Length: 159
Image 1: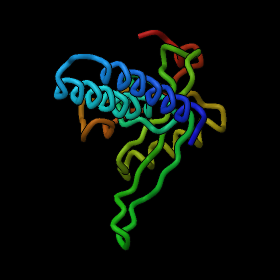
Image 2: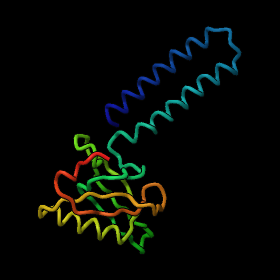
Image 3: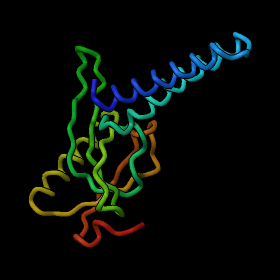
């Protein structure tokens, strides 16, 4: 367990303990006391799940409208195990070159995998590319993507 998760858990346990002590000494009906503790506990679980988007785990959110592909890691489908495959893309929004890259998890698409490999190979040889999402959506993050060769100034243009 990371220190951040441990700290978050300890903080919520402390708040729940204080709430429990205050509720035990009050004249509120038992049902309301139980509900208050239950809602507080539920809030902790909601907060924990929400924070997972910020801990470095890949996001299932939609890709930015315009972005630069920095790197990718692909696990191809395996018919023997039934694994559908997945693509992880490290992406930086085109308009915000100072922001850190974010990792997106995309469903495996053979054509998109080939395009991204070609783009990465050409980027290693000095070419510059930007990408934009197209209207063809297959779920949250499995959008169609088009790559365009660009000059360095075009790479980080604002929208």
